[in-house]
Length: 496
RNA sequence: GGCGGGGUAGCCAAGUGGUAAGGCAGGGCUCUGCAAAAGCCUCAUCCGUCGGUUCGAUUCCGACCCUCGCCUCCA
Image 1 (cartoon, rainbow, N blue to C red):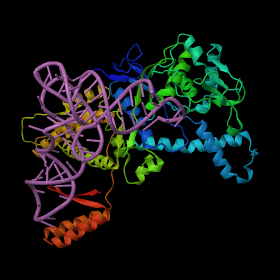
Image 2 (cartoon, chains in turn orange, blue):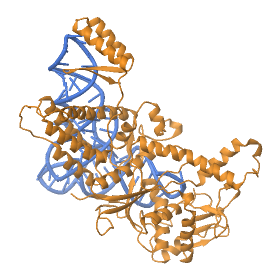
Image 3 (cartoon, rainbow, N blue to C red):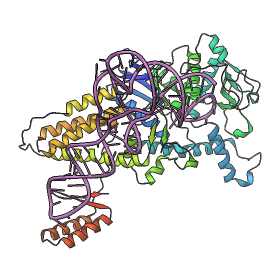
Image 4 (cartoon, chains in turn red, yellow):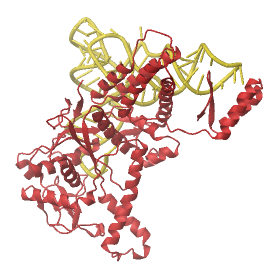
């Protein structure tokens, strides 16, 4: 089966055909983090969704170039930097801080650098493949300026009286371009009442958006020189500049959270197609948001979690990854702590099965009971799994296949009918699909030697039928967080 | 107001015009000195409500109720 994806542009599921005539290379751009805070669980759902798309494409044999922007200059960042400077430098909290431009720029970088580092750490914790390029907005000011110049040259952008440069939607549409490709827009019905008062802007039309924001006092020293005076990039422009720089004027995939459809992605299309005259992106994919415990995540409800919050509660990265990967990407997902507990149990089930398979695979060929095999084997596992994901990334169906395979494997394990060769084949199949799931193996926790000794002493006590003493030692181990698993082949220790 | 998603067992979540995947939790069993761990089995006469189309609808159509999102910064 060929890969099919839901394209927001057509609002339908389409066959995925890369722009590359050879059908091999795929360019993919994922909207990345704005580094003003730790990324929360909702952000992570979207980033893991991007990781899934990339992994599945690579699994299918495509050579993917993944780009993820790091937005490191933006209103909120500037605000936070300003506040942090004011608290750092209370005596200077006047109109003029006395700081030089370089000092402040450093502090902007320090501020964003902290969250950027955290972002990459979290990415690793969740076992996401590192994007091939992670360009920074602040390092692409030249490209941004050049893009804006193109738009001005084409008459689609203009500098207003406030010094800022805006994108003219009217001029853009006048060129025969379409504004509103990703969603239906009714410009006469756009609610303008709740927006920031339109008369605060010097732009020609309310819907026009800023490409270059003229420097204002609140920006502090966060500004760059530009042909239109000092200022900084608008919100959408860096994505257009960086994506086309790395992936070219037209590329295959652009991903983001569903909230970015408008205005961010719509404006990206306008800027990019307005400047290049070429079709920007072939497939737009949008991930749905999540709820936490059935409600919209908010700090006041106490259901706002960063990845770090969940790690502090004792959950692991792979449990969180699994949990965020259980539901289809276009459905709102209800993220619950109960679900995370369930993730722990579900993963343990897979781990247990794989552990037994490895045990058999690692041995010399042993005689096995010959039982006619039915149900899902390694071949079916890979095929059904692939088919499920090819169908617009139906991950739930894919998991269904995985667990059916686990159950069938366990049955065979129980009847001792799995040969060394079959176990090896099963593990090879698992490795294939795990290259997409990215679940990996649990962290190996070494059993402390004193606990091993305790376990041996308990065994001795059991042998001599001193069960009271043996049970006391079992309790002692449990108190230390280790549970004994008595198997026919002897006891094992498992970390709780 | 405009536009767009959802409502499937205790919880999470796939899916199909022909009678409901999977995970967690629960229950039963196996194993065990007893447990635990692990494994197996089991668990929705029913898919928001009411109508309609159909031999047959959870799946198609209509109405209604509830809910979420976008239209403004936002994954």
